[in-house]
Image (cartoon, rainbow, N blue to C red; front, side, top):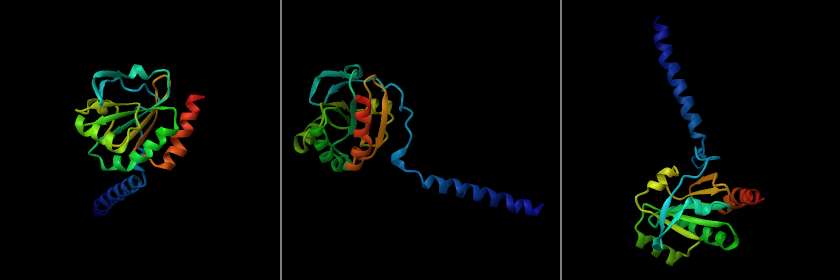
Amino acid sequence: MSKIRFLLPLALLAGLVWFLGAGLKLDPKEVPSPLIDRPAPDFHLTRLDDAQTVVHRADMLGQVWILNVWASWCAACREEHPLLVRFAARTPVAIMGLNYKDERAAGQRWLRNFGNPYRASLFDQDGRVGIDWGVYGVPETFVIDKQGIVRLKHIGPLTDEVIQTRLEPLIRSLNG
């Protein structure tokens, strides 16, 4: 009986160590999203540059597009931004920004200072639309197909490698 009392906690500890070890092998940028292969969440947001103009998800139907979630206070967004500006200059795909939990003036100043890769940047000051999209940090990037279905979610700053090996091939495939 005393052997069992000794071995049971040891077995539980070994199982816990195994689960923790398996978790350490996961890539946090590869967190599965429940949105993949489902309709993109609806939104009705004003443009960052024009508080009178509202943009809806339905406005994007019929085209492949990218949603890039960013904020002026985000250090990783600063790292990603020049790459996004270069990518926008060479792709016909609409890149929409989602200015997340930011101040309107700060977001506008950011785009004036660093360049504007977005067809439009939507203003999500309170982060409610970001919650609908499953955003838990910035930057995050989504690719949405012509029917409004989310096909990719990338967590963290985009890199040249991610653009070349994941975004561009997917966009080409979705555009047929």
